[in-house]
Amino acid sequence: MGQHQHQHQHQHAHAHQHNSTDIDWAEMAEHLEEQAELFAPLYRQAAAWVATRLPEAGLVVDAGSGPGVVSCLLADEFPGARVIAVDGSGPLLERARARAERHGVADRFGTFEVELPGGLVDLDYPADLLWAGRSLHHLGDQRAGLAAFAERLAPGGVVALVEGGLPARFLPRDIGFGRPGLQSRLDVAEELWFSEMRAELPGSVAEAEDWPGLLAAVGLRNATSRTFLLDLPAPLAEPARAYALDSFRRRRNGLAELLDASDLSTLDRLLDPDDKLSLYHRPDVFVLAAHTVHVAQLP
Image (cartoon, rainbow, N blue to C red; front, side, top):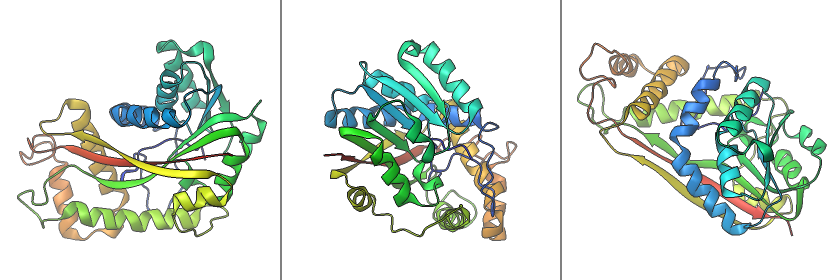
């Protein structure tokens, strides 16, 4: 499975297929790139904050880079660094290389097709910054994954772990039809899906998601966390509306077994382009999402 930076639809941007962890990242490449671009303002803020912990960096590694949107943002934030996008999907890394060319950073940008975390041992030299954007939770043993990240740091190097935050919101609590509180019920269904996904991973280990505590447990110091907001109020521009539609479409397809008939009917109305109260036409659709970044340093 290709590890990649992805938007958790709480926020998971990749397709949720209930009882399945076999996700075709290459098939989702365009989708992943569009979603990451929408979240670029959030990631720019996060990268700038991380840079305050490490103003100079020789090597920046984006572990689970996907199509390289964040990798290129990191190249902008660390203009003196070489940036390596690491992912298990060759087609996603092809997109990362093309993006680096378009953004004028190809001369200090590389890609490395390996599976996380083991493939990191083949990096030519240790990283000053290892960024892991929502890739860690695709590893069965997250503590072991973090330990592998820490082992690839140069002295004084930093791990920036993007995990957690808040479920995204797109609509008011009461949308005028169906039972109010639809999004909260979708959150519950997705939490159930996520737990099953984690349990099915090879070598899965149950672990309390105390990210600063886990960073300390693998020998890193001065762990701190900060949450960054993506706030796109109504009325939405077309890319953001498309993101909202895709979010609800994927949940309708992936979580159907976990939702009741009433909520499925509501989702079908929201996704019907001929319904004037659907996501295609509503003036009250917005995007509000929060991602948390945890940073810690090797002594």
